[in-house]
Image 1 (cartoon, rainbow, N blue to C red):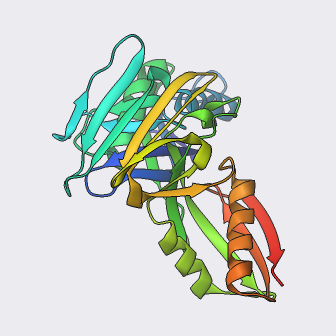
Image 2 (cartoon, rainbow, N blue to C red):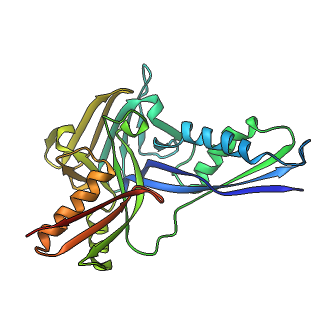
Image 3 (cartoon, helix red, strand yellow):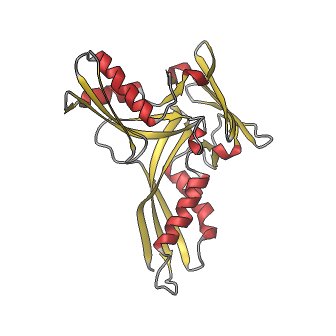
Length: 282
C-alpha cells in the first residue's frame, strides 16, 4: 500500500500536568505517515493538503494549550460557563490550580500526557477529516534531540495578541552561552538547572503569596486566567516573559556574576527559534 510521509511537519509548544513534576513546558516535533490508495493525481494526498489539514488542526486544538490527563486520579475538574477550573494534586502532594477559558486547555483521555497518548488524540480528531482513499494515519511526536543543556519552562504573555497570552503554555528549550567568545557548557548546564521545570512570571502578574505558594492572574483578550503553584517552582522577573527579554535577563545576570567578562546568550523558545542577547558588566 502506498505511503506518504512528512517529517517535522510542525512543532507543538504547550504545557501539561505531570504527576511527579507538576506544570511542565514542552515542545514536540510532529511526523506523519499516511497510507492508502492513490487519488486522481496519483497521490495519497497532496503535500499542501497534508500541511493544511494536519497543521491547522494541531495548531488550533493542541498547540499553546495546557494539556490535562483526564484519567489521572489526582485531577479534579469544575468546568462552568465556558471556563475551565481544575485542581491537580501531584504524587509528591503539592497542589496546582488553574482557571482559564476553555480554549486554553486540551483534555487527553489518559492517565498521563505522553507523546503516544497525545498522538492518539490527534489521530482520533484527524481521521474523519481525511479523504476516503486515506486508509490509515500515523502520528509520531518526539522531543528535539539536544546535545547539551536544556530546560522546560512555562509562562504566559498577557499582552500577546495570539495564543501566547494563555497563562500556562510552555517550551522545551536549548541554551547556548558564550563567555569571552568561547562556549561554556558548564554555564549552560547551571542555567538549565536553575530553570528546570520552572514557571517564569512577571512580578506584575503575581496576585499574592502565602507561605510556600504563589497565585498569578490577569485578564487578556481571551479572558480571565488564574494559576496557583508552589513558590519553589516559580521564577519572578520585572518584565514580560518574551524570549527576547529572557535572553537579555540571562546575559545580564551572568555578566554581573562574571564582572568584566563578555557574555553572549542564545536562548531558544522551543525548536529552532529564539533570541540572542549580549552583556558586559564592569
